[in-house]
Length: 419
Image (cartoon, rainbow, N blue to C red; front, side, top):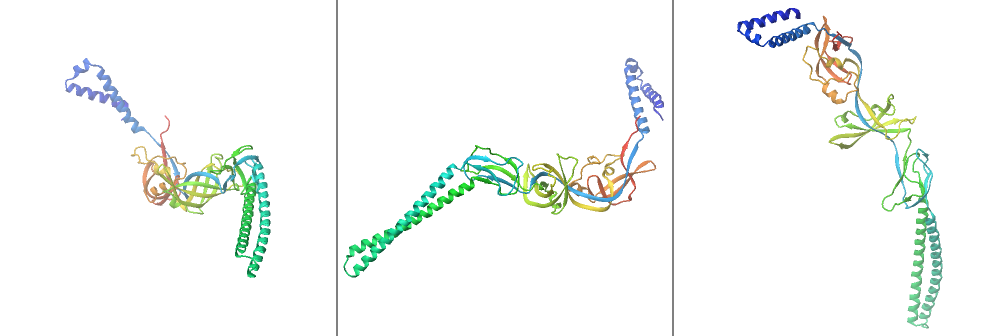
């Protein structure tokens, strides 16, 4: 029955009820009640007609056979495989700076020099002290020889009873003093030599040398600047090793770290090249946890080839680590698992776009081995089928069992035609 025949019948029924209850006088005194009642009747009739007359069109997709890759996503930064902070062990004034940002350097290259006037003065002073010490050694040796001869003569005379015991004691004391004086002179030579070596070492350290082959990432010193290394050695340069081999350091969630293993392949993207995907390989997963806001992660290191130097240190990256691959699997679109016909109760699942990024293993654990429903068109009407599903990558899910095969169409969406 359509809406045009419903309205008179319902109106007559309403009027007859009112007549039976003897309420005609109420409607006569309040005519607006007639209008309100008729409006309610019209709305109910329209809803009844719309529910019977709404038609839906369905979008279908086929089940496919193929490989399913499960990935773990993690974020991190691109870093050099080798990075060194170059400092100065000496305090002084910077005389020259020979490199700048992005300068390529080799091991042993001079990066900067300090003022050496004071060091040269100290070296000359040390050399003079060393010469004087050596001269005192020669003098002490001569004195010792004379005192030895005098002592030996006194000993011979004492044996002949020509000299007195007192004279022998004096000769012995002078000889012992000469021996001690020679020892002191030799010690002074050693001190002077050590002082000279210290000053010569300072002269060598006045040249800031590159310890590695690489590139200058940062320079924090200019000619004329004062370097104070008394308490803590200041960082003058940051050097990175070979930038053609980089390292991606990502933070893997504790829920996913059990799936990540060395030698697994991965891909990653950086904001600088949104249309480019870079390959990488897991090298190591550190045992040391990192906790930020009660979230525990573990650092994973990935080797990255950077032959074209497109990647720069510090770039933020999102990595997808391939932790599992299933070949020749029967795959159902995830949109079909989320679909519910309009007249059916909605599933208690969060709707996710069909082209979402690969799922994390949390989703894999949630859906693995679960009983799920899909809908197929039979006789123009949706019919429910129950499937047992396996792992998912966020776009497709493995079908473990069910009355369905590759090529069968499943409903992924419903829509009403435009009026």
